[in-house]
Length: 216
Image (cartoon, rainbow, N blue to C red; front, side, top):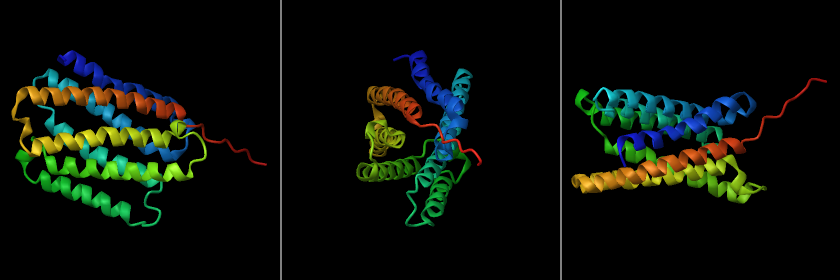
């Protein structure tokens, strides 16, 4: 897979991002964090593309992006009332994410390098919360689960971030020393990323319009 193909696969984020723009005013606010997350992801892809064209590393902007990504997804889970039984959970997890990220990037040199602990921590957190939400939906959702936008989004989160956990574990144990292995891992991630973006598009299509109320 060449660089152009990687860029095209990454550009699939535009499909759900554009759908989010179209549907933004006509859906419930509880989906806003997810749509903002798609916009931020799209912006980061654009920035990464131009930085790579100039011949520079995209590690710095990606390190900043993953913190924004983790906080936006955490905010989305809050909107889905995952912290209903423990109100302080959202603030504590947000602080934990920021603290781990700052610790990993505690010096100037680390800002420009890949930091495994934070990526592993927030990916694991997202997978656990996604599974929890889908388990809850399995018992409470009365309609077809496959048409539930929340269920579809959480399936996307589970697939994507589970693979990211595997990648981080590979790197921690030094399995990235072989160039062919690294290439294969990133090619699979590129395919998964594109498929998940299409899944997000399907989820956005399934989001119902918010009800319109009229004053009597």
